[in-house]
Image: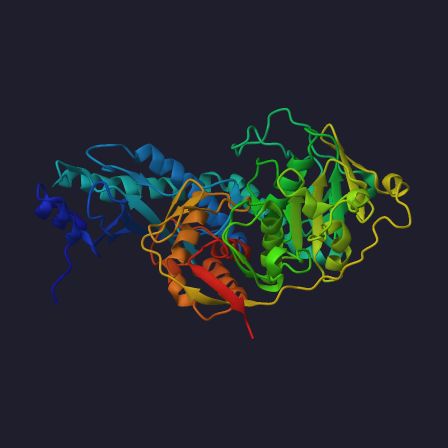
Length: 545
């Protein structure tokens, strides 16, 4: 049996040759100080996406880490990201000398860059194999693969012992959020906003909490206590199942509160400010999306009587309005299991929220049943709503809970506002039904889909598709959606609800079945996958029989 060549010997052999000779490294491995370095994929060009290297080592974690590997891997990911960033440097052309993994956001999720399997740690790392004038720089490549990567990973492992207290806090924070999310349904809550939370962000696109922000304090009437399993009690506002209206003047914190609640579907790291904001996982923040594609969505509970006899039980358009896009997004989310819909008056079509009945006599054709008339029947189907509005009696009178945001302070004004409602206010006159499941009827392949900013691009798409979603927090999650988009031909003839839940399970439990050793993948939910698939004009749906 011929012994496989080591990374070092191959690099000595190909040093100075043309760049394509790097392919000889594919599958080569070497062990440095108990860390096995294996070259999984080699880039074809110095300007192409960097190569992939898998580094594996033993990991002796404390017994209290068992069952908490996602949180431990997240902690390791953050330190490995910093170590690799320091070790990375440009040493030639293109991406030569690059070392890195995707930058983690403040949420704790499963990522393919760092995996813990029993007593084994696997790190998947991008490496820019170096060259000059497309000639291999073997000595520098050896330094990257056999010195810098083992050193970076070794430094992180050493920190596990030195910073065990910090690791405990990180894991305990994850534990707390997981526990709260599990017990929310039993408490008849859809979200919990802990006292002392810092909800505002430093700036519009920033992840850091706003310095000197007003800490959140629950109204006494909505305050709940949660006893954690380790003899600690925390308090905060319990957002009840049903209809919650968040009202108040502009710039007083309405949107900040509901965006934090929407972000609470993920666990947050210590120091983020929102680590005590926990929301049920199957929640969806909905916005109006003028011009979006919609395929065979049953919008009939809210949209009907359209000109030309348009079928709103199987509504299809390539140019949805603000109202039809909002309703379609609500129905698409409910179809795949959403139990909480979050809406902000600032970002949805207001005629979907309410209509002033006093002017209805002037309008000849009625085409929309607003949420003010159908929200109650929705709650009877176990769908809760949280709506931010400057203050509208039509919404207030159907709400179960009304929260006034006043200078970032939450005040329960339910009983006071309800006194303003007459007997006719809040009366539901329409029925609501869950939209039927749909199957993918027709689908066309994508060529090489990619994300630029928050837009999905591919030459087989008629135009770039915006897929910005408040629940998607980092690039690794967008990468997951792209990886799924590459496989859409496999979904033909299958129910959307089955597709997205199967993919969610795969990404949570074994993402490598989906994407191999790609280090760039992050966990996403079934709702996020459905969000993307519903917006691709190369897919058409029909009701499942």
